[in-house]
Length: 104
Image (cartoon, rainbow, N blue to C red; front, side, top):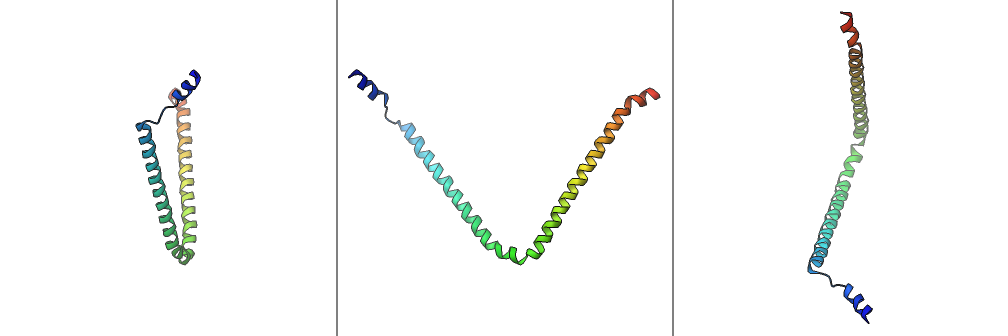
């Protein structure tokens, strides 16, 4: 009978703090779920509203997108090439620095 009492004593009732934490966490989760649903609905409505514009302006948007992509790739390539050239020239300058100082 002593073992049964000890088993029952181990099970404690939930505290008010634990209950309040669970309630507030549930409310916060429901609020965040509501915000996620509203943002999804807003995105769907905006997509449906702008879809005719994409269809109408697609002859303009596709070439503009290709041109923008090529322009961005060109700028990135030229920037990378310029940075590489500057680093090579800097390396050449500092690798020859002792020879220049010794020859003077």
